[in-house]
Length: 379
Image 1 (cartoon, helix red, strand yellow):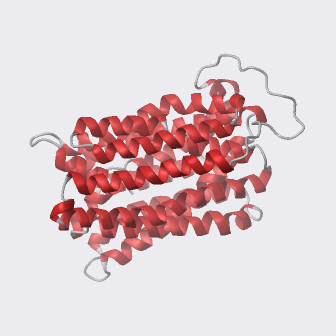
Image 2 (cartoon, rainbow, N blue to C red):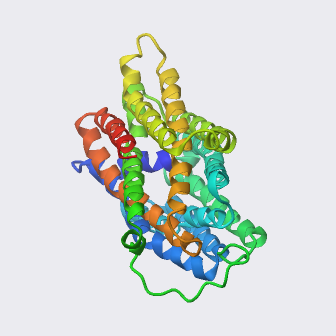
Image 3 (tube, rainbow, N blue to C red):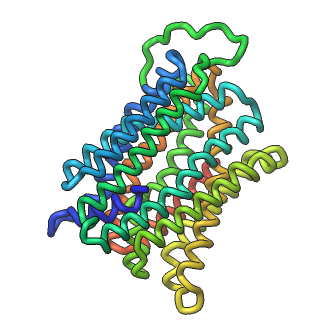
């Protein structure tokens, strides 16, 4: 719900004369700086205290972050909300470890794809609702400014807190190991990136993950600004595009990936997926060049389709490959590490993207397309 509103609200709160792209990029990167540090820690804890407790705690922290965002009337409070969001962002990584405990091979790839589809399901509904609330806040005097933002933050926070409650009730409190394996001993003290030292093959895979996420993160703080700058589109159009992209991701990860993973080897699958992502990302600013003959929304929807297909095929497949490189009792540590690697891309990406956008709106998208091609080559 908050994705577009964060960009536009931070832009409105940035003092005159400050570099808006750098400020927005720094604000968005705050979450991922925290996430980079704490996600491997949360992952290791889930290996030894159980997945359920960590998932519930992180989801509750995410809800608190959203409520704080709803109360924010300054950049400082926005930063606080993003810090809290970073502390709670490991819930998806731990859920992925939960799945990896119980599936193998192509079945694991398909199951991780279903986790991605579940995340995308929230993105189908959230952005359009966020767009409607943003429009209400702008059109209704009683909802203008802070009250309209308050509704957005409270609704998003309530959804997350309700999710934490549901997880606490229905999620099985199973040990983080496969049935029949011995109990996991007390964990030795390790650095956050010990897996990279112990498993050299994982270094190359982590590099691919980081490069791929860097391409998307470059656009993290610019897409809402791009469509507003080029076409005058607001949060309703943004919500429709992101919701459609999420729906396409659900179709790919929930229905298509399992079929494809059992019939196509991983290397050409991942390479093709990264190329599709790159073309989709680069096509966004190109929609302005084609506007005289093709409606911009049509081109943007094609770009969203290509990106959704590429990401829906690549991300679960790479995660599945990574999970096979480490022992079963360290899956939480692994997915925390991958979350941290993703976070590193999202620390650098918004900063680079924001600065490049201020220079030329198309520049972040050209860079992102090139980075995805690089990721395909690294595979």
